Length: 144
Image (cartoon, rainbow, N blue to C red; front, side):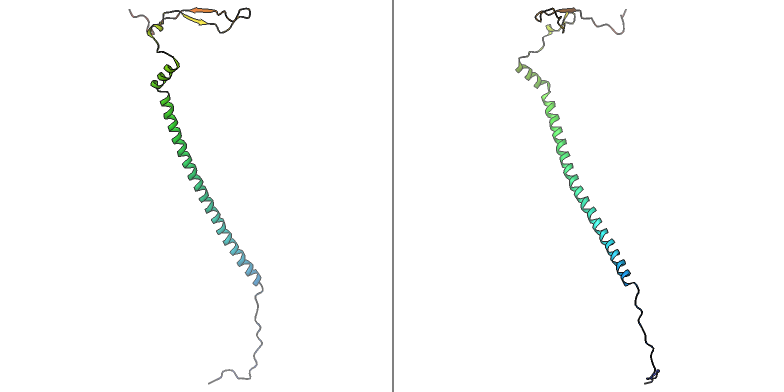
């Protein structure tokens, strides 16, 4: 074997140069990790908030459907209660009778009771004022 360097060659002392800021690199790495981790935590929080809002929306949707169904049911009950047949039955139970044709006379004089009583009159005395019903006029005038 051939040696290229003589065995008794003095070597220069080599000193290793150390990094002057290993702590700065470590702090930078730590900050990047914290930013990344906080981003994941923020995204997770938003995700769970969206899920919570979704569940609340579903509950409100069910409540709205139930309320609409109740409203439809109540409208049907109101219309059934105000039907003419049921109103007539209820009126008969109260003692009311159907209107007779003789009770309707447009040419008959109408008696109107005064709502106020004079201070010197007794409450038993009621004044009545007679007013004549006006016959309906023809809107076209008289036809000749």
